[in-house]
Image (cartoon, rainbow, N blue to C red):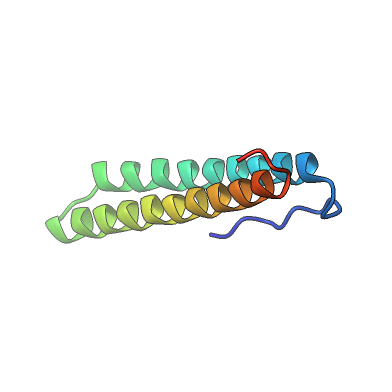
Length: 86
């Protein structure tokens, strides 16, 4: 999952930072919902294969969120550096 690019003008760092944070929050909400579905699927699994499949799906969701979080961190850090805040 990727974050939406901020829509504000480049010289306007604060709206870009806020946009990145909101985008991260949206990505987190989607991934949290998917993770809940995956946990439910794992709890209802009838076989080891289904449980392993659900565990792998949960791992992929966690990795996707980690990537989104890392990307947002890089964006916010770059914007802060542009403004002389970091």
